[in-house]
Image (tube, rainbow, N blue to C red; front, side):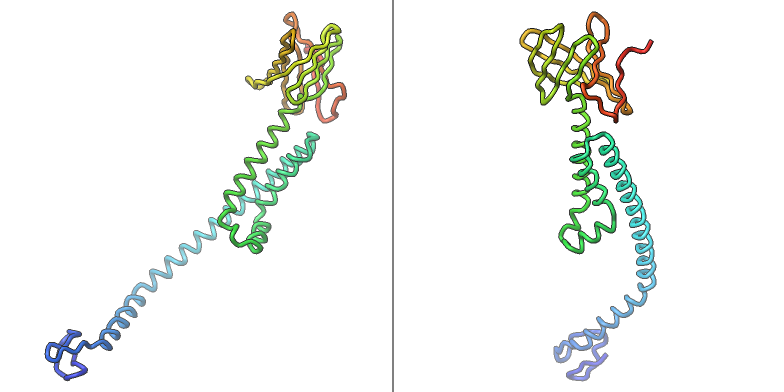
Length: 237
């Protein structure tokens, strides 16, 4: 290699030891040559890595889409269950929103309209599922809020933690609290003169609501029965 300024042989040095000139142009050529060699030698590896990543991303996208459609189908089923249980508004609407949020095509439309929401899609979906479950459970737990009557003249009316119990012709007013134990909802009613304890179970649209008196079950059914449910009115013998 020769110096561009004085023409002396400077071997591979960029700075000429004779005149002190720094051969910048040659430096640039060397850098470009090295870059070209590096790119060329690694080109095959980069292409192979790119293809592998591309296949992996496709597999992940397919799995994600399948899971999304499964969740959408489950949400639609839950919405129909809510409709059948005559708890149509809030549970039905919440599960319907979840179903829409998990349909990939709907997601793409939302992202195209609001691009900033893309990074929040997963947290939003999780929150919607949690809210739908809470609303669903809250509505199921209120099935016992009704006016119940028995064959012996006993009745109880439950609504918003307020209870009115009629036993032997005497009317009692008070409040109630619930406790869920081993699949049974215990309804503890405290009135000014007496404490009552009712038991409520719900399983596969079969409802059992009773009061224990002298070790005997006194069954109660709603004053206006709902066709959706089957009510147990006496002990099986």
